[in-house]
Image (cartoon, rainbow, N blue to C red; front, top):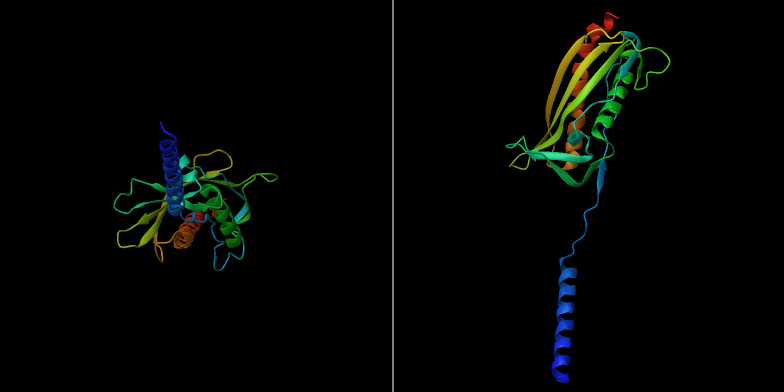
Length: 211
């Protein structure tokens, strides 16, 4: 190969490398910022003047399949509810079962349902135990740009003496979000959970009054 041909080929390689470099720079967009969300402290309205449950109410760790322990917000098309996907760059501040339990415990404390509501049964023996399972915690996206959220919680109320459960219930709520953004979905989750907790307290009242 002549020196001129070698020089020409080297020049072509340099041009090709420069073109690839420029193409890569042009195709690199701004990486979206990661966003993290947490559940709000809910307004319970008027608390009980005296705790209906004279004792300790123990809220156990909420169970969930691995998908609903994922910190990424989950979503699916409303017409394909069996299929769920993870949002990129939108995450819960913690595992959803932990966030829901913390919110529920604070709600029950603020409502004044029991003398003490705890997640750590230390000291006094609990009178009742709440066992919960998070069965759905996802967004539903509609073709018209609207979105909703769906919450499903299973509940079993057990006396401390190991007797059969006093109550077994399934709570399901769907709440329309103000718009299609993940931030609006988080607000809708709070509203849906507030309705679930309110119904849960109404179901618990006859059971705690018997203790």
